[in-house]
Image (cartoon, rainbow, N blue to C red; front, side, top):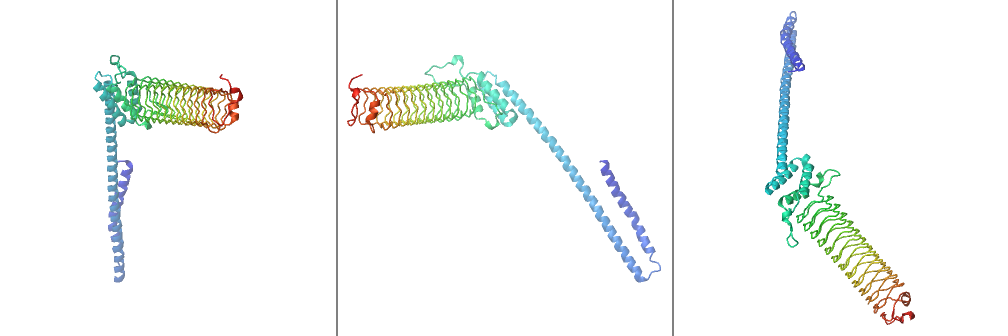
Length: 463
């Protein structure tokens, strides 16, 4: 008991003892003073003395009750404080025991990652995931351990090399590690830290709906991987191998795919807006209905690719190879196609309004009912191209080559045909063609004009 508490108790005891000692004295004095008084005065004094004494003892009882109550309250408080301290100690002990258990689980799982058994390694991976869930402080460390595990352990062992006819099959432990990494809680990622899977061998991996946003996947092997509906927004896939991969409805917005190999990949309905596909290989890839708005496809190889109904509005396709590509009903409004190779491509019904096709190669290209209004086709090679029913209103065709091209039913309203080569071209049924436009063009007797338009005088000879 503290000195302060001892003093309070002593004071209470002194007060009670003094009261008990003084009580008889008060009575004695009261009765002693009654000599010489009348009976009435004696009765009044006695009554007053008794009342004073009763009040005195009542007050004393209240004081004693208050004292007892205070002591009881103090005891309860001291008991509560002691219980709280015991609880704090028990909680701390439980916390320390949990930390020891987590540390033991963590170290055991790390040790088992190097085990020869695939099953043991797989179990260790899922054990690490549980540790990450139970101990947020270890979360990012565990993610880095698992990404290192994937990078340092190739999915396909040398003795298990696959042929082109054999489907890729990733090992169970690597697949498990990737599953844990890609279903992580991205909100717990460390600031300025990214999932590091550079040059990782993930051929044939199942990454369906995987969260790889902003991940570093430079040079990674994802050939034949399933990335359907995966989130690769702002990820770095520079030089990555994605041939034969499935990226159906994947999110590739603002993703870096420079020099990536997407040969034969399935990118149908994928979101590729603003992505960098500079010099990427998309030979034979399927991008049907994909959104490539404002994407950078400079020098990209899209030979034989399927871009039907794709949105390429504002995309950069300078010097891109689109030979034999299918672009039916694609939206290429305002797209830059300077120097692009579109030989034998199919652009039937495509929207090329205000597109820049200067110096593009369009030999034998199909443009059935395409919209080329206000498009720029300076020095474009459209030899034997099929422009039947095409809208070329206000298009610029300066020095373009339309030899042998089919322009039947095309709209040539205010089209600039200055120095356009029309030898062997078919212009029967064209709409809104004015005689002055023909005087600017270069043709000969092989050029087939509408019945209401006469050949210029200098077109009498075959060039």
